[in-house]
Amino acid sequence: MSMIEFHDVEKYYGDFHALKNINLKIDKGEVVTVIGPSGSGKSTLLRTINGLEQITSGKLLVNDMDLADKKTDMNRTRRDVGMVFQHFNLYANKTVLDNITLGPRLVLKQDKAKSEKEAMDLLKMVGLADKSASFPSMLSGGQKQRVAIARSLAMHPKAILFDEPTSALDPEMVGDVLDVMKKIAQQGMTMVVVTHEMGFAKQVGNRIIFMADGTILEDSSDVTDFFAH
Ligand code: ADP
Ligand code: ADP
Image (cartoon, rainbow, N blue to C red):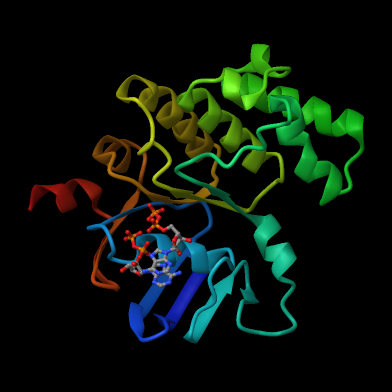
């Protein structure tokens, strides 16, 4: 069962050709690591999947919805596909708990009690149950990123995209964030992860994509073999 399908996708920013003839199928439950030099189109690839960027031509299906079709409800797609950013993007003036419950309450129309119960369960899962009343400014980078991941999960996504989730962190914080991502992967979540963490790619990912200059140069399900050459 595929979750994401690119068929002959092209993406231009004005005259700049950012994605070139992308053909890619990602199945439900796959954990795909995307690597490649800066400027190769990795972030653009992720951003098209949840509709933050529109493709110029070709076909892009996410959870069987055609993103170029005017009838597709893009709010629904953004809800179904979570995104975790390098710089966390938490609401500074809201507590950790409120950061997590806001989306479920406003968008999913969940009631307060259910939203808070789920948020607390997620905070336990990411190891931050004692931080529910804290504000983001009181947290370390690694803690902020774990809150951002919990916030994404609270929306009951069908897939989560990670755009360099550990690149802004001090090295000693990286492990905790990767451990949480590993847990989510083991629960069967479909994940597309742009990262420089080759340990994650090898241990957790079951597929690796190498991008260069807007194209997919390699797409390998044999992660060990990928690193052998
Ligand atoms: P990566 O994530 O691999 O670093 P990006 O997808 O961020 O690559 O960027 C690919 C190329 O597209 C870069 O040359 C970047 O400058 C360009 N680009 C990205 N976003 C935009 C934009 N909104 N407008 C114009 N050019 C962009
Ligand atoms: P990242 O570090 O996540 O790759 P960038 O600095 O490449 O972030 O891009 C940050 C934002 O600026 C994104 O929204 C991206 O689309 C936009 N952007 C990147 N390159 C360009 C560009 N050449 N022209 C216009 N916008 C750009």
